[in-house]
Every structure is written in C-alpha cells, then in structure tokens.
Image (tube, rainbow, N blue to C red):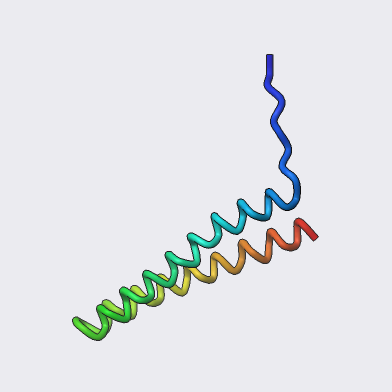
Length: 73
C-alpha cells in the first residue's frame, strides 16, 4: 500500500523555505568574508576568486527566492 503524503500549509512551507534559504545566505557571506580575508592576508587573486564564488551563491539564492515567490503568488 502506498502511504499518503501529508500536505503542508502555505505558512509551514514558507517557514521551511526560509530555514533552507537562510543557509544559502550565510554560506554566501561566509565564502565572501573568507575571500576578503585571503585577499588581505595572502594573494589578492585568490581572495577575488572566493568573493566571486560567494557572489554566485548569493545570486543563486536570489533566483531561488524569486522563483518560489512567483510559484506561490
């Protein structure tokens, strides 16, 4: 027998989405901060690559947020 999946309410779905996407936001800023540290303490180009990677993570975060908002709306 197949189990029926429990449906989440809109508020529950939003809270879970917030928890997950918040981790992307923290990850992006941590990577960018590490890049700033590397560019000040070591070679500038290594730090720039870390900062670019952090910016890409934040852009992915933005795209996911906008996509979810359009689906819910």
